[in-house]
Length: 281
Image 1: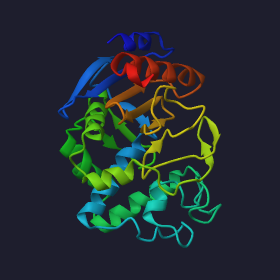
Image 2: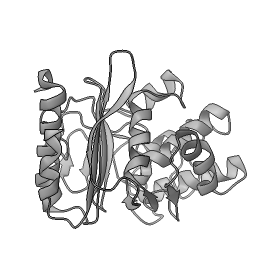
Image 3: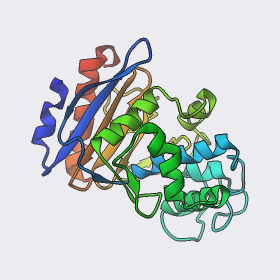
């Protein structure tokens, strides 16, 4: 598709990008893609929505609940839901809470590491194994793996991210009510810093997914609806889904996030939506 032509001009050595579209009958197709489809890339924080999906599967299996206490090092009153929504009060790194739960949106790697440990204890297996069995295998993510922290140590190919995006456009692993709760705002009204884009008021998140809402600046485009959800990673990766128009876009690169991505990604998003969903503009 024409919207992907500019990807070839990105200041990176290798990039792989794909666009998916949901049809009226609920089927999902790849509308276009560029770059290597089977080369694994480091996901960085795009690991988080994959890990979160495993948490939601564990909840549906009855291994834990969203209201279960988060446990230390989270402050008293913090729950599994707080951890998923970056509202537990835990800092980005370290084990000393900086806020009571539910007061601020503090992006936290340690919170996702605590989630991984919680699921591992409940399931009786390492979190990497649970993620592989609960998410990677059912979705056919044959090139995906977790090699360490559930906050940032994932690897996947473009084909893998396409399969995950297809799931997000037409969920089959999660019940509709579970998916809806994951992708709508949790603990609304919380302010916080969106990494790479500064303070947002409010800084809306779902349960494992960042929500576009009214954020500005943002890494998606001006044409993306407020309902857009997804995540980006410091390694130059992203996945977004705009449920208002049934379009998803995934990207992988071998250059860390920086000014190049701040400039290129919103332009790409707007071009994709102009081509597939012109009424969104």
